Amino acid sequence: MRHLYFPGCTLSTKAKGFAASGEASARALGIDLVELSQWNCCGATFPLAMDNLLALVAPTRILLNAQKEGDHLVALCSICYHVLKRTNRLLREEADKREKINLFIEEEYRGEVRVFHLLGLLRDEIGFETLSQRVQKRFQGLKVAPYYGCLLLRPFQEIGLDDPEEPRILDDFLASLGCEVVEFSHKTECCGSYLTMNSSEVTRELSHAILRSALASGAQAVVTSCPLCQFNLDYRQGEMAAHYPGFAQIPVLYFTQLLGIALGIESDTFGLADHHVDPRPLLREV
Amino acid sequence: MRIRLSIRETRGEFVKRVEEISGQEILACNQCGKCSAGCPAAMAMDLLPSQVIRLVQLGLEEALTSETIWLCASCLTCLSRCPKGVDLPRIMEALRQLVLRKEGDRLELSALPVDFLSEAPQLAIVAGSRKYLS
Image (cartoon, rainbow over all chains, first blue to last red; front, side, top):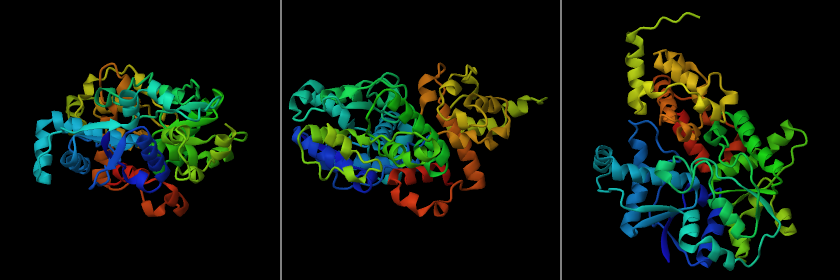
């Protein structure tokens, strides 16, 4: 089935492996991700100030472009998904803001497009049982920590993908690939997000708490759907090792990288060599 | 410590601005502390999130000089747990905006190490700019 697709800035540059593995896996499952012909950055934050309408213009333009080519839009990046989904709801439900934004962009958009995350499509359209049957290489015995982070789930009233405190979607997805999914306390705790730009020590501490929890649960890898989480959890492990003697490094993978490998797709374009903590020795082992 | 309170401050211009920008009613918070208990960044903050709200409730502009507002990562954990439905991340954003709009940028991109900038994903740079630049 054809699905309009918004890759976003990071998947087109620093996280090309996330995009390549996601696109190839989706294709193998009959989900044809067709990139929007025109798109811009979503802004990477949903504006929390009520009077900041200008920051809604960028995601509105993306949604408007999607409407010209179809009726729904798929994202892989948790943050893009979050921003597009919340903006779309606002345009649908808040008439006064919608009118101002439409006047500004000189077009008419009323929040008609439906916004999906690839994980949601895998669960609701393909189904994890069917997915499990399509797996060619099962990750038997690979212990993984499903790390959801924040923006894929919260606020539940607007995102509605899964329970914000006890989510299952990534757990069930990984189980369908044959992974052994570990329970750990920090699966929905914040990695530090944009604090990485001016509070590196706090970010290191927040990310370290997540990895420590995953490691204590016996995880051999952490799996995420957010390029900012991936960066904070992966890149900052050098600092963690320097700060906490004995800290054992752990690979941080995108869910699509494991999906592609499980489906038997050649992983050359999956960006596995780009990670700071190299996941390839572990993946070879299993 | 003695604090002089009056209706002039508790319903004054500062509180009005915070309520306008955040869209939240500041007195809806009953100080249960659940936000502070669950805040992952609380360990690094000078004031707990609920204490920042308390300052605003009392009309005290010290809330604007707390480091706490810059250590909130808008992770929305407090929002999902607040029994009164207060959108605390929006209040933190309002406080940041009041400072940014008056005092200007909180981040100097050119001062960041080149190694870091060459590794950081675009969305970190865009999000950081949105949150820390006026």
